[in-house]
Image (spheres, helix red, strand yellow):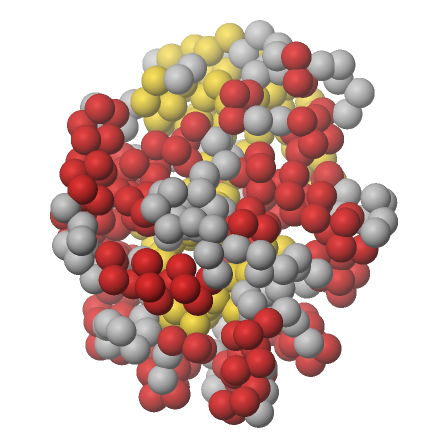
Length: 424
């Protein structure tokens, strides 16, 4: 299907400066690809023409760390420490999940992603092939990594899932990884390092989320999680960590040397009182940044606007300096940064030849006026209510409050409630 957007404002990304500019004109999508930006030839044949009425087209947000199917535990186990939340509340319920549960819980999460202008997510959860199927069936784009740990899975299953998911669709991708050092044996971590090397894959894990995690790792191995996994050879082809709050000097050096990504999750870290990531330091060091919501059981909403505001707001508070972590760096991390962390360079910006993963921001709302600085409006005052359209791979999946994913929302909600309803 070919789509023509007329009378649009279009956000252009400068990958060198991490800044943005806005042009006026039209944008044409041919199939799943951006065909023209700014000016569209008169002979372009569109199946659907949309008058943007001066609203803004921007590259879709990339949720660079989440556990989508944890929608079933939203608002179930709150106001407790990470360790208690994980071991006493989450793990016992997760053990009762079956594959079909993952399918419906993923669809619920995907619906919420779309309302927030997210066009892809970087997921870590059980049954990756079922996760991928839910995404493909909705027309959504999902990259996955393994959540392998001592409580389930094996190196052989990770390798099997790597092939199944990567070969399923152009909407599904799998990258090597594991849950975290504190849940995973040395034998399994060594196996993951070998897989990453074998497939020349980046490697990701939860890293330095809490001070306790880092302290206990140092007691076990005499080094931080970053230092330990680097010595195991996990980052030969890059990768990164989720959270990256409690980092030490050598950790920063490793991230920079390996070209790794620090994926910040400010909403979850705030709610679980895990700490504030050193975002200014990452920017000062030239370390790659991306943004994720974490799962809906620890956040509890999947809202990139909230994450962007918290990313910069908490950093300013941490440094006691309102000038740090400017809006353009935050928007870059939420769009292009996430795309690069997820090995999706074809989805990082609005350019000819890139994938048509595009959202429309409704500028005709009070929180977007006046237009002194549109990028700052998006980061500091934007909200999900400003997302009027979300297109993934050239298909409009969400428009003006309506979903076009092939599922009845009421059925999805009923399935999710039934799943948690049977839990003990």
